[in-house]
Length: 99
Image 1 (cartoon, rainbow, N blue to C red):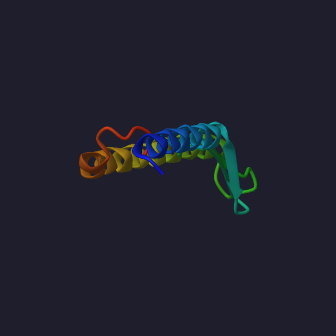
Image 2 (cartoon, rainbow, N blue to C red):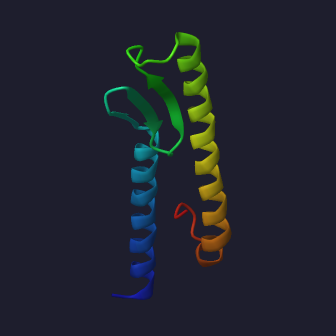
């Protein structure tokens, strides 16, 4: 296989990887454990936290706690993304879509 054919194959693979990543990013994932249900997008951003009204907390407390968990989780995920980019970026410069 010549170098030009290998490069074309690598470009096609990169396009397919980007399509797959975009599809995952647009997906919605739900998880539930009885009293808590979360909704997260494929880009790892928490969209919604629901605490069952059957919990022993007051309704106003539940809504406030849901918001606080949502903000805290997304902040932690953003911190992970930042550190990942700082640490891994040196390896992936010029290779879009890896991190």
